[in-house]
Length: 95
Image (tube, helix red, strand yellow):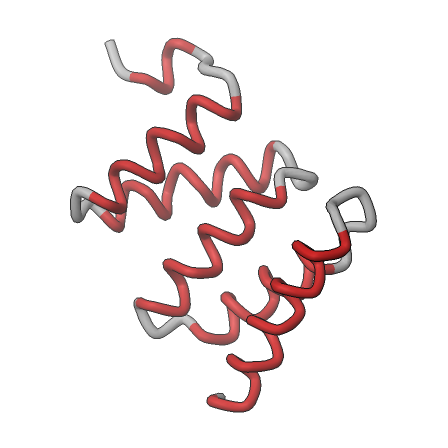
């Protein structure tokens, strides 16, 4: 049985992806986060983490789009929005 067959909560999937990345399984973490963002387009933490992984693996355009999308979510605190917007701006300068 795999985690996918268990229909875990999005917070559980995010946490698992976080630790997979930390443990070096970047490909599986990316796969899980992409699915999570697709199913839950309002999950800003997943967008930010996926953006970070994309940036680290050379997928800068995808990272930029994810950071911008996350920063545009008005439901998150202003400080978080500014931080995400700053990450997008810094990445855009490097592209």
